[in-house]
Image 1 (tube, helix red, strand yellow):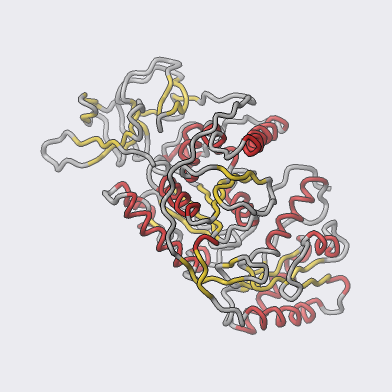
Image 2 (cartoon, one colour):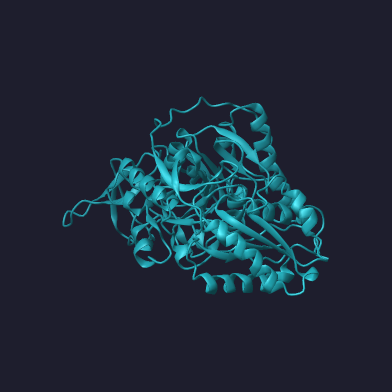
Length: 511
């Protein structure tokens, strides 16, 4: 967990309050907790520092003079180097700092000792026990198109069943349109098939209707075989070119699924059955101080209970990857983690794109200047647990503990990949806010109280209280209770607003 070093205001006419944070004692920058004005004096580590310019909240302030080429240290690690002289008290941002990262790297395994995790507790949630033994936290009816050509039919069927049942008896009735399933080759075609397969098998669904066209690449017969063993009562198929009236036939199938799912009841399930995705987006300078460390503590807690957490966004591991790699439980897992990182770097290189230009305009506006800085804050979501396994894109989760998953940083694609791996919910930290949700509950955790207050219809939980005196111990206890309520049926904002989408990773040719 991050250790905070507070800096007190020097103005004797006001109450002393924390206005900057030094995250690690080795850091040569501090983070402003509020907007600060040029000329403001700070008393830091026995010295007086005068601000050389206005500093926005969440941004970095130089603790000393930097010459060109000097390392900028944050989180105890270099996050880049100065590309011009920077005065003490100046604003450190993307205009005067540059990444240290370049090219592919060779890695050597330096295993770390297993951390001391929290004790096991007898905690449970009210969920749905599925026929194959998996646990669902929702009991929804899903209509999944095999190809984009039948998106309209899938949506119309969902609307018709919603009107007929008024949604009573199940948690939701949802169609999941997408653009793919035909005119794809090789890996793209398989990625589409695997993501849709994973959705069909997901325990949050009490019933699934797979709707095909008939002439697409993603043929329903081959797709049925891809599912392997499955509950044939709960997953049904319709090929629209081969039925007289696709709406009438679809409704007959859906009514049968509805009759089954509406009889399901919640039962007590140990919290160790939870599988949780870890994601961030719209990050700011507080992400690595509040919400991401909170998720890290929660991840360690859930792992200690026998549950599973999954970290993805591979490009946002660049610069912090060795921290994760050396937590691998074995050399075999370490080798998988090396391939995870270098394969994604090759993906950038093969497409003639810069590997390390990741921070978005929103990230930079929020105080994140380089990929190392973003990655060091991002990987805090994984806590300190040992990495038990590494999953390829579209793989289904089968190992408890902390897992790494291959997927890009794009919010919709990565969140879909986490849910497809088998996560019953996705925890999503944000400093700037976003309304979207994937096909499982997508919990938005604010890094700052201002965002939580401004966007109550987007944000579900406020981690900004960690900047205002709440201890991590208090915050994580509150968070655990909150997550168990979500797992037990309390709706997230994306569910209340019916913001539910899927996005499938595409890399190659479209015919």
